[in-house]
Image (tube, rainbow over all chains, first blue to last red; front, side, top):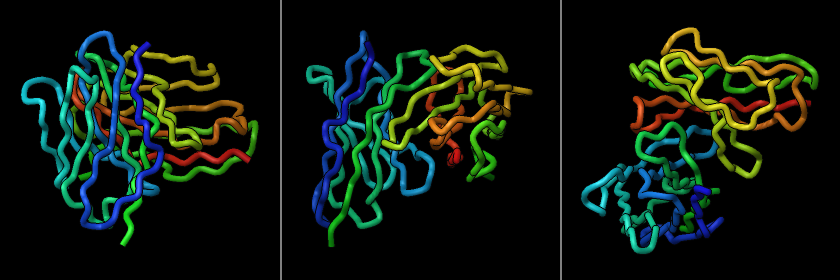
Length: 113
Length: 111
């Protein structure tokens, strides 16, 4: 069965420190991969996506993610976290030509002063 | 210039009532979706429509009935609401096989 795993439920990072959020997928073939962010009471905003090509993708708000086929991973990174980055982050996957997304359970990012 | 909009944003109702949530997208997309986010923030697909035709119907009770009057709209009607229906419902849209864009969500509370 297709699945997306985000092993960390919560992560706390100091403002200005670097961030890495983990995401692993289990799919029959290499899926399309996405990271979305959800601020409290808000909808989901797309941060970045990977379809094919360069395995390091750049997104909005200074985020990047690296696709590693050998590890079935698509980890999200940011070199310096800002307090406004505190939110819930969702990794998602879809099959090429997909109709729906499979989401991970989310990682809540807390930013300490 | 909102891309995907939903109304209402909040919906509080009694068990047994019937309610509808509306979704509209102005992105020119041909595919629209409904997702349910439960109290633990888990997101799961409910329905998917492509060019007004139902293409995905996950194991959702038949009390839930989506309706797509045109490609820009996908409404969700829920009959005989139950406590377990309390959740945040997200509408999304995409061009076939491309990135999905989400609405702001509708928080449904069933009392």
